[in-house]
Length: 630
Image (tube, rainbow, N blue to C red; front, side):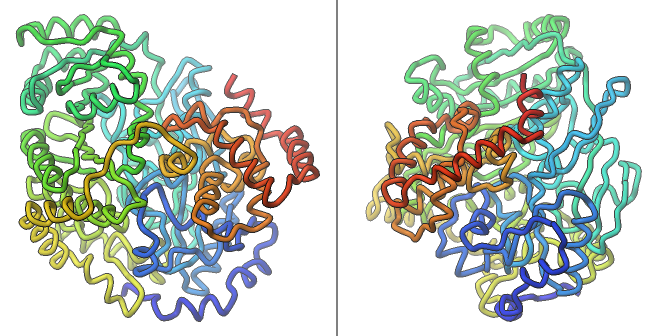
């Protein structure tokens, strides 16, 4: 039986759960202050506060940062005893609400749980903790002549996070889903049982792409590969999206080309490449749809070129253009600079339907005065992961029109045979397009068996649970939701035109001032992975992500405490965050401006700055990170 926690929420707060847990927790790190917990009430999505507060209690009761498995088990024992939700969280770099609390509860922050435990060079494997970053693994592996097989476009996301929410990304065309690279993983079930499972275990797939509803992944043993000889990217231009996908379909069926083993086949439409031109203030890319193919050996490259020579004269970009695009693969959110907000629909769609869907998506966008741009990774001979994006501005009333457009795009995709790339909160109404009735029954039966108190990440995925007697959640009922979204699609030429007349169109941003910079932040968590201040304090408020959140509060005139203000100065000014920023923000200039504003209001805490610098200098973890990155 799936429990309904609503109505018990305020009573639970009155019981002061954090204080109760603190008495039994020993030295487990607990985050319980409201201003600190705020960082754990959202992911990278820009969802209006009025919407989340209408539906959910998104502020956790408290957050814990466990140092080991025993501490995680303590949290689960407490949660089962009190029957309160537990929400596992990594870098929170996914945008569909999977780590957002729906009725308070306990967030288990696994982001600091990031050690690389053992690299076996002979077996080409690495064992890591849940919060390990893909970038750290790659840096260490390359010192041993090895590297990752597949990885997400957000290379600073956590390993367990990507296992739980995705698994398709860069190099997936050659190496398949991430699940294929897992040798084993250790999970903690909701009852606190520690289990090591392998791909042959019948329970293995219950923990892949299921968003933490069945337990917590704490340790993973992954396959690695030899470092490739080099990188050989090719960018081909096509007069239309349809022509590009026609080429892709022929390419994936070409036995000679597949013998060449492309690592990546990626599609970018004209709008996407035009935005890259705009960001570069140049005309490097043609105004055409593009297909990027990357190979990792000279032999494969020669085989590939020989195979595609049969297709006739292809319009290929100069090699340096293809190389630039390949090297920018980890900065997919950079387009947000033009927004300053970006919304996206992600689905896995049959290759044969991709071009037709893109045409439909762009027509829908045009109805609302929105330019759709596409990024797609080809998964295999039949399917593509397709990201349908558009720019908007979360500060404006028009944003409330943009939000349902995101769902309309997903609905358009599933009507053409696609499935959503994850559920979380915002895609939960599409569950029938991801799982058959039989599979849903199987998942629910396993949920009741392994999590009888329904403490693991409840109120999403299977069915949305909301406040106010669960009435607001009715909108996420699959039947009601499907009818409503299809009606919006049908009426979109009229609704979109009226909305555009009344509210105007969103214009692209030419440059970023102080306020726009705070909105252009992707909240991707890249900065957390490289921040010395976070490594020492384990406090997201001292990171770029946290400081930008504080800057927003100052701009909006919301209350800021002395403690929050002091976090601004806990910074090495090392430029690490700026160098890996997804949206390429000028963060050092922003920090200078922010520090001046805060100092004028609160003063400069010289003693605490000195104490912080000493903590960094004395930190073993900090010097290990310096050594790892050299």
